Image (cartoon, rainbow, N blue to C red):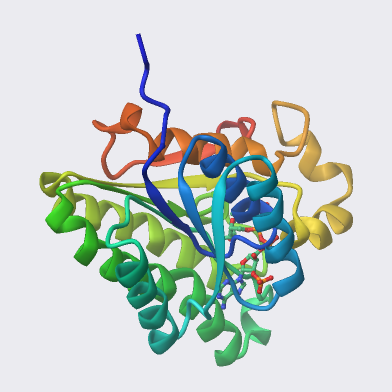
Length: 252
Ligand code: NAP
């Protein structure tokens, strides 16, 4: 009996796949058999490295540069996907940034940049992906939100709003798309060891670690494993959910 974790023949796009969580998602989706388009913005060397690793392990991947916050660049990315693959089975809206600042010091540019990438970028990619997925009557869209949407940190009003918005966006899209065979879900990572969280982990010392029942920070693979599950047929009846992968942080 096969339990359906095989992604052979599927095409997947991971935004922000050059580093951190997106990098591991790209590798694990490829290891499960998917042909992965690894989007990046600035880290060309890193993306070439991950594509090389995937190919050397026998998988299929290609890099594609696009600023996910920009309509014309997202359009070019999806035109490429349509022309080269003619389909898209999995979209992982992972690209994200933080611009932490206490509310009274936060500039409009700090707010806008975080909204533009974390929320507007996910909207743009989801819209273009749904256009391809609808005629297929199949597709998986996985939005990487954050535990910071519900357990809000100081200085993260922009990030919490964007990631909370992404959870609501996930639910609304699930209402529209589930009947078309497209499952949309969100993953809420806790504190994961990546470049993004390095500064916070350093500043907080043991305080954050003590608030994690599992007793350790997460690693990108913890999130990527959930993403592979949500990308697979095993998740076909899961729609519009926000799933925390946080070592118990959200319930402590
Ligand atoms: P990271 O290590 O800082 O990596 C961020 C990735 O996003 C990089 O690959 C980067 O690509 C890409 N990116 C940045 N700006 C982009 C743009 N304009 N267009 C396309 N890609 C862009 O971050 P991470 O920790 O892996 O975070 C990944 C996701 O998980 C984010 O959405 C983040 O909010 C979420 N998350 C992380 C944590 C955590 O503890 N780490 C917790 C909760 C949620 P380039 O380097 O090529 O520019």
